Image (cartoon, rainbow, N blue to C red):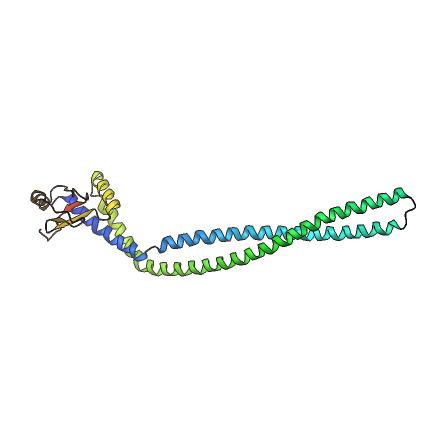
Length: 237
């Protein structure tokens, strides 16, 4: 038997077992990664919203304080109106009162806007906190499940990967590239023949091709699917 073919048959068996391990883990690694990204995004948005809320609350406190000061000014100016002795002084105080009231009107509008925004932000934060809690709970559950499955398979996976590293040292780069290319496209790169057919795509083979495969001294690829065709040790088609 061609040694390269022998090594590729062994390599295919190792890769088959590695595929099975990945299937046992399923999509959990991707789910965990997706949930981690979503949880981080919600956390970041939550921090930004909380920061905006804090800024709005501080501004609201400041505006309320300024409005109280303005009310005191208006009251003070109105009291002074009774003490003036000339029309000029009266007009000056009246202008001051109107200016302060105009500023108060702007401040009151800003106050109403901030109060509305604060209410909206508080609702957003409450919803985001619920989402964050749900993500964390689901993430913990998926991590636990992944850990449980990984504990059962990681040791075997490491063993197989170590065997694979040693095995490919015996395969020429040209054949290894071909093998990896087929494996990536077809999942199985090396397949046996059965009843005169490729077991990868079930293409019927001609007698001459079957004979050449049986000799196991050359690379024979299926004309239909491109897989490497072999006779497994101990079998004869």
